Image (tube, rainbow, N blue to C red):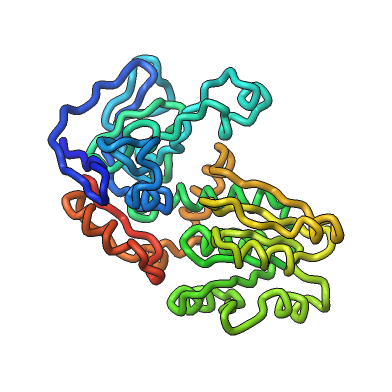
Length: 338
């Protein structure tokens, strides 16, 4: 079978390798599609070489069908359409013992700490597998992983219907967070600098503002009778986004940190104190988030076709990453692995 190995220095090599046999607790999945995520782009730009090395199959936003099942696995059958929740916890650390296995202190993230889904066949622990409806297009199912990130962020926020939400950053995760919040009954405003993404956000029914043209905090106060945003999702990963999240939050508002900040940002802690704002981290997802994401995608609540920018074959993975690098218009690129 073919596998695309990240080789360092923004390069991939396509190699023919043996199919990995399943252990008794494993499942082998024939990969249909795998999306390119922001973490994959960090790998491509060399920011994670110390973690992944220079010979690793990355990728985790996938869909496919089961090709083989280990002898000790029950409830899964060859041919089942599935997605993978790519988290392998140790089960014994303090986080796991407290029921937080998704943020296990020894967590293996499949596709970073192990080989991932940019290959034709992927062998994974059976506990990471989620079955999906048989009539769900596998292209659309490849978006379930990033939708799960959004579901987890919204669940962490304790969002209530009718609340005013500000999403800072309109990339794939920001846009999906806005959609999931909207589905939960929120009034959503999105801040973004890309004209293309602003247009998409407006077409999806959001108030979409360019922070270079509008003071986002002032706009939120004007739209909410001077209250501000009940919930702010910081998804930009930028210092201006950090500044805006504290400025725009209502008294006792909740700020959810979804973005990964490569460097320590400056945060206005006085504002947190003065207005009793809560700051919540939202990292990856839990099983319940995956099931919610499957329901949202299968029901059509997520317009997956609008979110998919392009689809390329596995042999074109290098060109796909190069096209995404620095591209502020693209949303989600998929690699067809089968």
